[in-house]
Image: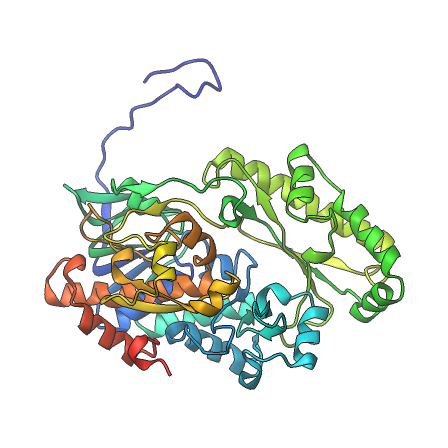
Length: 486
């Protein structure tokens, strides 16, 4: 043992060697049960593979559930043409059938229907459901889903189990098991101690690139400050708000309401969060971070959803600092509103996000890296595995309404036996900032899971999977690919 002064970062202890029990030997191991991981596990199992899914929390869904980032946005273009379907659409359909989600009527997609537009403007959901058309300046309705996180947790459980996936919750993937440059499984930690799963293919759906980084894959580092993907997120639900009274006050006394929101926005618990209030909220007002919950039966609920600047989204001390200060900030803001803003008098904080929201991070260097030049050239690749609507690049969104993402962005360049199905896919920083959201990760996951099962069945490397066969299987799963686009 080597020891230094207490608190020194140079202290080190050599861990003794030990035998670790292998609890499963499987075809496909998925590490991380967020949107990409769930889609990976379901698609691999439905494709005939034996699948194990490891998830560190006690629920599936990642940011879509535990992070309270429950909007599944940008499923269709500004003109109303759907791009994302497959497992993502299946999940939405199951939620809608249980009154567990809000989606706009299909006839309104891509339209400037004033009644529909005003509904989303009043609820402050323009960021998710509306886009200004760069040609005529009108608001267009975008196909987006707002999900009930608790119902979504249960639906994901059921879909995973129905597919025959072997599920391990409360299980943190600790370190990949390597043979040379080939990933052969994963050590994981839980209340049962350190255990291992051996697999023919491993899928990294951690979001933070925990597996591919530890496996020695080359990757691009965390994004530079100032981008959406350089922030941490922390949200809360405020319940029992008299929405009608609050909205009437906002309409009848707009100047007073605006001043109160600015005062609420100045609430801070540290210089860092005070800086966030100015930089992220803009006019130092809280109003544009309050979203009126429009999921069926969620009456009287407002969501407060800030993104918070940080030095490193995966540094445990930085995450702890932001988590503690963010929760205090949320309580301060709610308490101010409760005491000063009509409609909040009998409100209470129903829930703060159980898990801190990580919006970006390491990006694997894959066999192909998707860049803005690919978007501008409308490149349709021979290995295209998903079609992502482009709604957030102004005029470019009209001229180039889709991204055609190649399978090779999921395949690490120098590591075998591994696929990436999360926001860590191989992409430029600019592309990742716009296309690493929940539905996008589901698309990557569905392709990765299907490809992993194919590789196991064929006895080949994941990088050698036949593209045409993969595309054919994805189409049969309801994925929209170029040949099936209207």
